[in-house]
Amino acid sequence: MSAPSARAGTVARTRAALRSHDFRRLLAIRLVGQCGDGFFQAALVASVVFSPGERSTATGLFKAGLVTILPFTILGPFVGVFLDRWPRRTVLAVSPIVKAAFVGLVLFDPQEQALPFYLGALAVFSVNRFYLAGASAVVPRLVPAEDLLMANSLATVGGTLALLIGVFVGGKTADLADSSAIVVLVSGVGWLISAWIATRIRSDLAPMMLPESPDLLRHQVRRVLVELRVGASALVRTPRAIGPISTITLDQIGQGIILTLALVVFREEFGEGVGSFSNVIGAGGLGVMLGIATVGPLEDRFSKERIVAGAFIVGAAFLIVTAVVLTDWTILLASFAVGVTFAWKKVPVDTLVQESLPDGYRGRVFSVYDVFYNSARTVAAAIAIWMIPTLGTEGTVAAVGVVFLVWAPVLPRWIRGVPEIRLRFAEGGRAEEWPRAIAWGAAEEPVEVRKAWLDERDGVRRRCFRLELADGTVLDVSAVEPDRAWRIDREREDAAVRST
Image 1 (cartoon, one colour):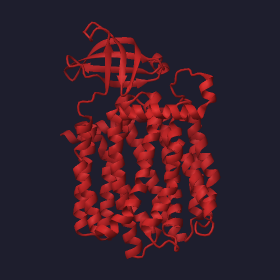
Image 2 (image 1 turned 90 degrees about the vertical axis):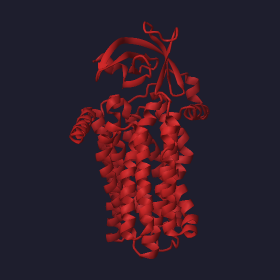
Image 3 (image 1 turned 120 degrees about the vertical axis):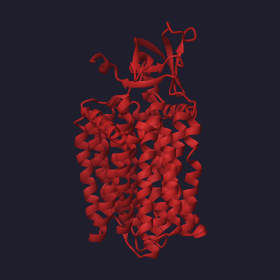
Image 4 (image 1 turned 30 degrees about the vertical axis):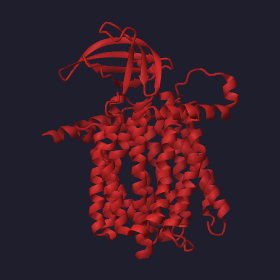
């Protein structure tokens, strides 16, 4: 009897998230734009990894990964600082146009004309930093807190699914046409369409920053470095952010090793082309679809950190079993399982990170998050260059499975007992007093109480406040009496609250 109600709850949350006009546009941007990204990545893999001049599959994948990681390493620390100041709708609209302007450079031969080829790829991935970090940072501004996990399911993982579809179709197309030219063209068209959709977002998604000194703006580079240090310090002192980021980074290293191994087997042992890469990605994409369909019902029963722990256990079990009999079909089965558990990890992790800090920090936090998350695949390819010859294919799969199993309980223990927020009261927080400040992650800010009330939810009495922060953010918070473990029920912009 519980399963139908769980499904109904998922449908209701999906409809609630999609009720927002601007969130629907953001979702469309992610789907169309990241599908274009998938076509582009397929073209890159076809030109670099499956090039006749590349003898080692693992080394070729490392080169392709290095092209993608350099923008994260160089630009990553700076992206969030600008995102916390720029209208994010403009970022979402302009970035795809710039990518489309550079995409033609990857039509050059990477063996004979390496300079324009790699410059074009670096330019596309560099601009993509602003695009992806901005798309992740704005989600809490578009939906209520209670719909945030479902919104992340639709946007973040849905965008990843679109990426996988683009890689699958792009790889098959490049194999059939024996050329990546048409694949590159499709990616550029997809980005231009996503730019047009971004112009349809009604809000400029201006970040909630306090007025700042023009002097500091004239010295932007110094400010970036100063704020990077402050942001990194805040992140390290926020267990509910650094724990999930470390966890998903480890997951991506494991997945990257499995992907590299799959390509080594298909290309070097079975003699297949870039279409085999599409098969691996396609199996993973189907797994992601199942993960998206089931992560909502899982939220009805388990905390976010327990969902992540369970995903590690399930993924480890599949990998260890697959290691016993490693064939083309068992590799695809492992890819499918990795896709399912990816959705179970990524959605709760994104939500935990978003909820861990105020809006004024999210751009910087997600920029750092992107650096770790995406660099993990290149680190994985580098590890695989040594790991696969040393442990063999079966031993490599089994080793990743064992690491996943050992890590499963780490995140729940890491953030156990760490509250989402803390309210500061003038005289110790007696029942008749109102809060004066909020400690949210590593940040502590003064608050103004707009409203206070008592609420009964499922037979449990909760004390509630509506709080306004100095930057205009308005939070509805509540705690079960008498233990006072405060949580955020809803985050809204000041104008949104006035209109309700």
